[in-house]
Amino acid sequence: MDVYPIRKALAIAQELELDLVEISPNAKPPVAKVMDYKKFLYEQKKREKAMKAKASKVVVKEIRFGPNTDDHDYEFKKRNAEKFLKEGAKLKAFVFFKGRSIVFKDKGEILLLRLAQDLEEYGKVEQMPKLEGKRMTMFLSPKKTK
Image (cartoon, rainbow, N blue to C red; front, top):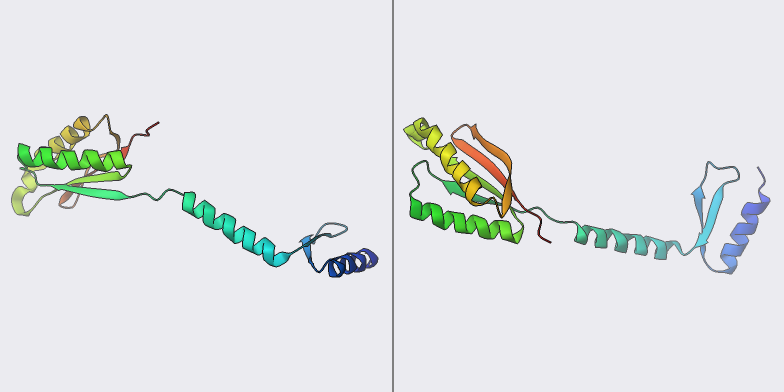
């Protein structure tokens, strides 16, 4: 390996009052670049921040039902769910079974499937109703708008 090109590159960098940055140390001969390193780091941070700002944040909204939710309450909660899906948030709808109401598992599932059917133009079912302990949960994700 020849030291002469490195010395020459260092001299050029000092003359321009910039930094000599080694790009690929394992290459034969090593690849280096003359640049303002602090400016490079600043630009890189700026790009990362812009990418992070563009990344979409997933918001999950919850709607809770009881197994014996009446029509008026159902309609009210359905309108809220519709609004959430229009805003682009994911929806977690669940039926909470208190005490012995767990015997109405089928009512809870029917309620969630009815909600999914009513909201099919705004969102699609991501996870069908599933019983987890005393909760029956279903996830809906918004449909992409053009």
